[in-house]
Figure 1 (cartoon, rainbow, N blue to C red):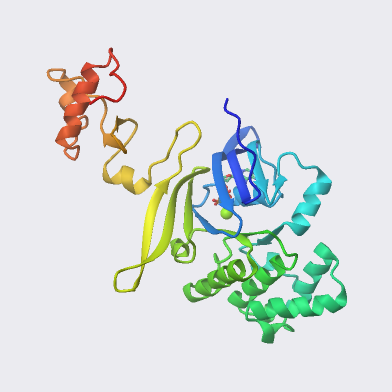
Figure 2 (cartoon, helix red, strand yellow):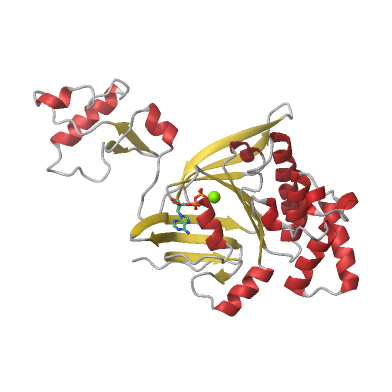
Length: 340
Ligand code: ADP
Ligand code: MG
C-alpha cells in the first residue's frame, strides 16, 4: 500500500476513502462508500446529489457529530477518526460552524436574533460583554439584518432566519462552515439571498464553506460543484471567468471526474445514458487521453451473437469497432507498451 502524504495546513477538509456503514436490524446501508474530498482553505464548494446519496452523512461526519466506519477525515487540522472526546468538543465549539435546513434547528425560538448570536459567542469563546456587543453588531451588519436584531425567529422571514442562522454559525469564528441544504425550504428568490450571504461570509471573513444542496443553480455561486453519487464523489464542475478579446467576462464551466487512488472513476449519468454505456465498456489508451466506447468484446466475424447491434452499436465509431476486433484477436498476446 502506498503511504499517503499527511494533510497540508491549507487543506481545510481532506477525506480519503471515507466509509460509513449503518447497520439497523441486520440490514447494512453503505451511506459513504470510499469518498474522497479535498477542500482548500478559503474555498467555497457545493456538494450536489440525489436524495439518499450520502450528503447529510458526510456533513455529520465532517462536523464531528458522527464517526466514520473507515477511511480518514481531517477538518481544520483535526483528525476526526483519532480525536478523543475533549478534542471533539473543542473542535465543534471553535473550528466548525453549522447551518441546517430546518431553521428551527439553527435558532433558539425564545431568543432574539441578537441574543441567538451572542449566546453562540459566549458558549464557544466566552466573549466578554463589551466585545460581544461590537462583534454581534458587526455580524448583523455583515448579513444585512441590522434592523432585525431585536426580532425573534418567528418574526423573521425564511431568508432572514437563515441569514441569522449563518451569523450564529460563524459567531464562534470557525475555520469551516458546513451547511446542509440551507435553502431546502426556500423559494427561488430567497435561495439566491441565502447563497449570496454564504458567498459574502466566505469572501469577507475567509471562512471555508461547504454547502450541500440538491439545487443545481448553486453552481452559479461557487467555483467548484461536486456531484456525489452512491456515497462517492463522482464528478466536479469547475467554473471560472475569463475575459474575451473585447473585455467581456465569460463564464467557462468544465466537468471533471474524480479518479480515486486505485484508478476508479464514475462516469456522469448523462454520458452513460446518451451512449448507453452499461456493464462493460471498451477502453483505449491514446497518446493524451483515454477512449471509452460502448459495447461488450466482439469475438469477431462468424461468431454469431457478437454481431448483434448490442455488441457493435451504431454510435460506436468505425475506428473503435476495428480496434475492438484487434484487441480481441490479440487477447492472448498483450500488446507491447503503447505502440500503435
Ligand atoms: P442525503 O443527505 O444525500 O439525502 P443521507 O446521508 O441522509 O443522504 O443518507 C444516505 C443513506 O444512508 C440513505 O440510504 C439513508 O437511508 C442511510 N442512512 C442515513 N442515516 C442513517 C442512519 N442513522 N441509520 C441508517 N441508515 C441511515
Ligand atoms: Mg440530507
